[in-house]
Length: 205
Image 1 (tube, one colour):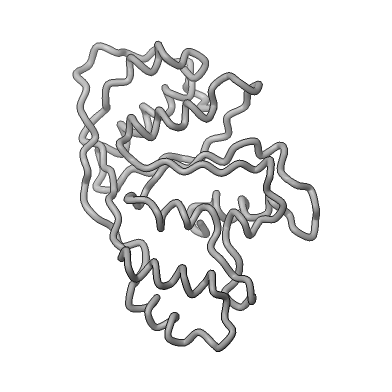
Image 2 (tube, one colour):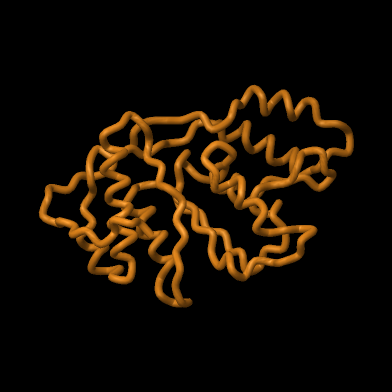
């Protein structure tokens, strides 16, 4: 939670929509095509299909960029359990609006009992920001590669849930909810949480 989450928030300022800012290339189609052509005989069919789909849909995705702070009063009323988090998101949007960068929220850990609306909160924030939404449940995950993908050197190589969100979606900066991380599998050989260490770091994600 933000250390400044208890500061009062005004809801009477003019609100603005968050428009589509432009496009961003999330991968090089020519590089993917070369990788496809260089696949050895017997390579993973799942990997081959992924490369083919990447080429078909192209590498450009929309990015959202705030022109200002959007209307959020309705979310404070609808999601009273998340006031502190909404305060923090509002400040991040305000900071982004004063830069040339597309919107990029800091990763957040939401703690709460089942049923308080954490997943619903994520969906509503994605709606607010006008971006895509991805959902990954850790309760049924048995290995980290399911989240981050496996190496192309493996026979059964395939992309992970995070990459699939980008590939199948329209946005370069979607909101992704990783649900029930406390219920992830604990097998050390296939640590389901291990992938989060790099995915949550800005420079390695």
